[in-house]
Image (cartoon, rainbow, N blue to C red; front, side):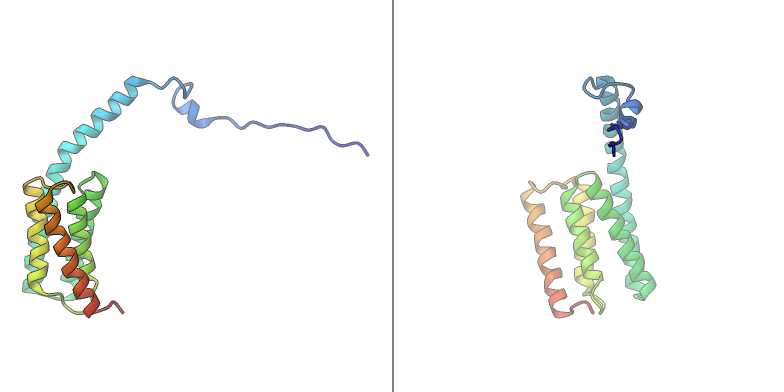
Length: 160
């Protein structure tokens, strides 16, 4: 019995077509436009972070007045949103502080109000003073302290 002839199928390179030709010869103008768009977004990002930090403070105040499950969830969501924004655009210290706040809100009992306030105040200060990168020694120590305090609370009240 004769074997059927071998057929080689090469699928079309859709990515290459979308880029408008060869991948090797990248369009430097397109790259420059992309970098300019990112730069423009980074300027807007500062405003987003400031707005997010102030919203977080307002939600924290609401939670202080009415510490129910709904208010706690809003505070958690606000800190999660801020964490995501910070991670997206490289504000590592804000992301770490917001992550610590999220972890604090995950414990079954109501976290110490002073520790909640410390997180919110730290996030607001980090954003306001643009101390968002881990090479900021004082800001980095502050965030590390918040993380340690959160870890202590979590050890005392493990998540069910």
